[in-house]
Length: 88
Image: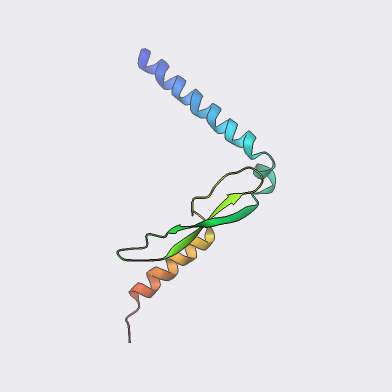
C-alpha cells in the first residue's frame, strides 16, 4: 500500500516537472527552439578521438541540447567512417 502511494507520488511529481518544463519552453513547443551555439564538447567517438560536437542553447527558453543535435550526429558518423576506411 505505502509503496503504491510512493510510486503514485513519484509519477505525479514527474508529471509536474514535465509540465513546468513545457511551460518554460513556451512558444518553443509550438514554433521550435532558436538554437545558438555556446561551445562544444568531446564527441567521444572512440578511443583517442579528438572530435568536438557543437552544444547549443535556446535563446527563447534556455533549454540546452548538450550536444545532441543533427550536426553532432554528422560529425560522429563522419569520424566512424574515416576510422573504418583503410589508410593508403
